[in-house]
Image (cartoon, helix red, strand yellow):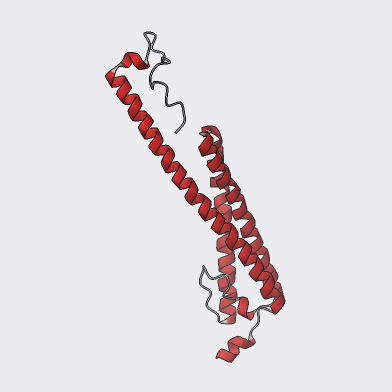
Length: 177
């Protein structure tokens, strides 16, 4: 049985299709990486409007990236079944052993590029998560300061015309969370 699996080869046409699928997936994750970089910048600048637009872009492009990944995984699983090779979803290298040398090198390079982009995306998402937590903590602290100011001495925050004054922490929160 082992020699039967060894004799089966991944066809060049299948390798080309797989290469295209890897490229499409990489392009989708690069787009998400650019959005993650922008998200970080917008959070630092507290640009709420651009954050909202960026979130809308995420909701539009994330399903495309997921669709590309699922399609590639299904195709690889199908190829593996045809060749009698188990292909777990996370193991993109599972089929490389049955590809020609040229196809193997090409696919391995594309897999490396995809892994590099997804690793960078995961890292940037983690940085953004930490920054978002910081922003939320900062907003809580500012809200607490504002609350104490209003409870202790409302005149320090608001003038007689109910507009905020220039004294004290009144007016601290202006769509900056």
